Length: 337
Ligand SMILES: [Zn+2]
Image (cartoon, rainbow, N blue to C red):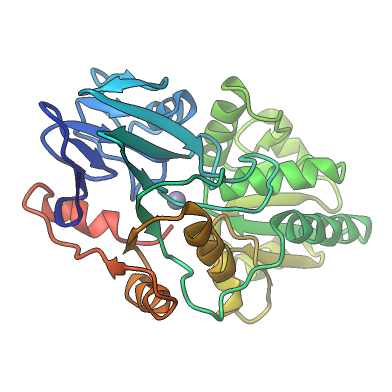
């Protein structure tokens, strides 16, 4: 049923492509740019993912949307929570007594804005492996988020400015939710505000934030000590220097990313707040699934497949070439977010 080279589930008359472009329906697991397919005519996704895709102009205005559990080309299609970001989902396709599951990006630990992934049984599995090496073991997301918020609260009480970096879609909103739990309403730039508004408008836990590009936002900058959430790449030593010069006060910087396990920038506190499954969770997911065949994709796919093979599980990495996928899509679809 599944063709790894094309990332395609062959259903008659309409095949389903998985987070890649193709001639058929397209399952979009979540709204990160490296999974969105702008040219898709028919999109299978959760309503929340479709709302985020539209908010970011990641799909055509005319795209047809399919979300609820229903038959697609004679097969039963069910979406399960992937726990990665708000709206993220896995897809299970059942046909002729055979079941196939694609996880998209996945997280098994509880979060404030995305819950956690459902464990799902299947015969054949395509699983993400961004953190598929044994050295990647994350502390629980909730614990890391609470530590980060405690750090920011302590800074505010000392009159210091905190700037926390995270990806604009998903991580920034999880950071805002944790700051809110600690009683902090952070300042955010417009690109994070617009995504956060989309979260609020589509039923996520209410996020409280102030857009920097408003009168209220500008007046908040005059307070002694405030907390801001910015895109990860903008939180740098240079930004710290500019803020220190401009405000004549202490400035504390932080990055929130799973990759903080690997490296941290000098002078920037790293919080390993990841929205991906770590090595142990990936292993647990595969074992629970009971899959007889496992395909591994993204990140450490080759190494994780080899790990599974040593456990006696039939696993292989997905080769990343496809005639159905243009060059640009190949590039964007296999970068980690
Ligand atoms: Zn993602």
